[in-house]
Length: 619
Image (tube, rainbow, N blue to C red; front, side):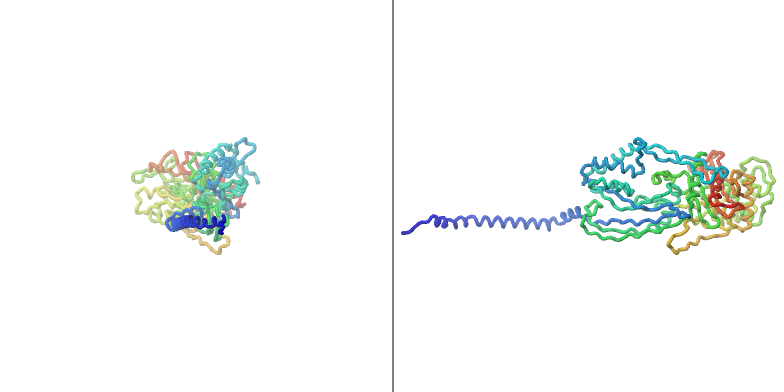
């Protein structure tokens, strides 16, 4: 008898179920695998370029510059004029900043301080920023040892306005979430950068950097020169000796988030260390430079002139101890000062020298043995030359005066008669021997060489204008060099600012020449002493010393109209202290000045300080 079991019948039904579902399961997994393979093919082959670019956007290799430390510029006594200090450049990835307004509110006050507007607890929201104001320069009789120069009068500055403006500027930068990189503050002082770090604002990056600083404010900055925010030399000795000072930047190859300088933590990095630049020592004496700038700025403001310059040039060596130009740059914001205040006009501006040139004319005639210091001339009240009449500044009748008196009273007519004793060709050769019409060889960019036409290009009037410094142009340094010939026994030295390169064995040969004899130089010096003692330069006297020099009042040439103006003139004085151990020549030029302006006052003030500073003993 056969028995039926339930589990047996269940077991008989199972194969039917399994055989009906199996094909669908296998079909599903095969289709899924096919889709994955197709997707993989699409990603790796068809869209490879697109996804590669996307990955590059997120992570990219970037070469970061590691700036070399720029060499320091020292004055002749070892005082730092310009140096490089470590700082931080602060950047931001706006997309990473969570609370923009909070970040802006925290950053603005510190960044305003970094911009040179420090906080002042006693100012109720205002800060005090020193603004230079004219201060009187004491005379040698009044000045006491150790007396300090009065401090500038402080002027209030609205700090809250500066902070509000900074907030607005920052918000515009940091609220742009599509921007992955922007500068918050370039070359920020370390102290303030550390305070900003402590704010712990996500999205900020701090990159090591260097910046140029002037420990003495704007003093001598016209000579030293400036760099731009990228550390590139723009002017002055910075540009002239850039290859020495600059050094060689290093580099660091890092992985960064695209659009950002922030390295990815754990990313690859390769580094080439920077090579720092070398120092230079220049010929400037900081104390003489500071005093020359102050005296010049005071007088230019007092007489309402357009500007001016002062040069202190060592006739025995060619070294330039001071070179000041007015107007001066803002001592608290040199880089943003007007461009005109950053120029070293003693080198870069040419002008008609006027009556100081009469010393060169007299030297040529003396050196040719055509005249002596006491040779007499009949000087008429006026001298017709072709279609013009030459007159002297002081109205006079017919005179019978010596060469020395011609120089004393600065007679245009008289010096024309002196030039006629040697003739135009010989006179031209002497002007060339003194270096006029070409570069004086100074190691400074942008020299205005001036103009001197050849005799073949002269008209009848030109030959009679040149003896009193009209019809040619020169810069103040060229004129100082010319007077250095008289102070240095007839020898002319090349003006220069470089004194040495510490650590270098290089020696520099500065050329010299001898336009006139030592005897001629002595004779011209005698006549220049009479100018100060008895003539037009009486107000150039230096208490306790014998001074020699020559005044000038040259007609001002209006560049717009091309004509001379009667209401304005270029005035000046060039001189030295012949009976001392120093052969420093001081050239003073005042541009576009009104009636009554003289260069003698500034010469007296500057050379009085020179004598005290250098402890010169009068002979």
